[in-house]
Image (cartoon, rainbow, N blue to C red):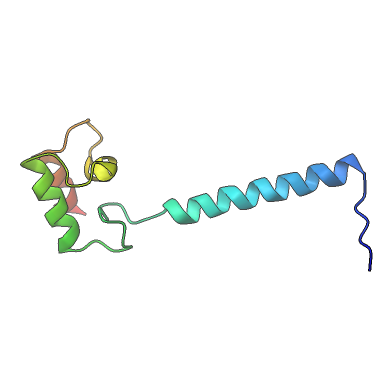
Length: 88
């Protein structure tokens, strides 16, 4: 069985748009986690609090998670971030 794809430009554009939308949706699903979920396991737990509190007293164990620990987005991980986490 042969499949012939249309050379119709509008069809190609529609397919490209669908593929683009699917990629955006997949990226959103992969990057969506709960606010305050430092270890990205899908829930806020004492493990998240431990990572955050450890980072207050020294560099984060995992620098990749810095943005997830900087809950008030001021560029530093400090007591203010702990306060935000506790208030969630």
